[in-house]
Length: 146
Image 1: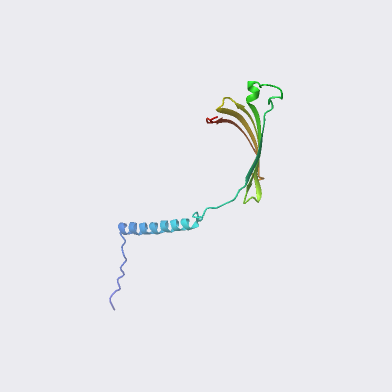
Image 2: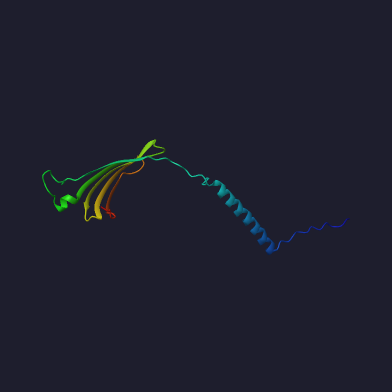
């Protein structure tokens, strides 16, 4: 008969196996990074949304000097009540985002300092809860030449 066919089985060393696994891992990670980068939104163009904010405010001095009085008292002269209604829209003014009602009693401590306690109630859109906010405000004024 003829010669026996000898089948040779390739032997893979540990170094070759590790090199192969490293190449597979590199290709897999590269593919994952490319897929992640293409799945993100295009952030080179900013998203614009025109909003309109309008407000109407009033100030009232409840202890204003009466006609005929030469001067008014210290506290009365420096006390003032302020109020404001603000309307904010979203989506290019297509719907109301928020309506604020603000009340702030104000006291002029010195010629350069006014302090106020501000209360604001915000009516939000139908997806968000309404919010109360109380704050302390201080206003510093610069020197105004006569």
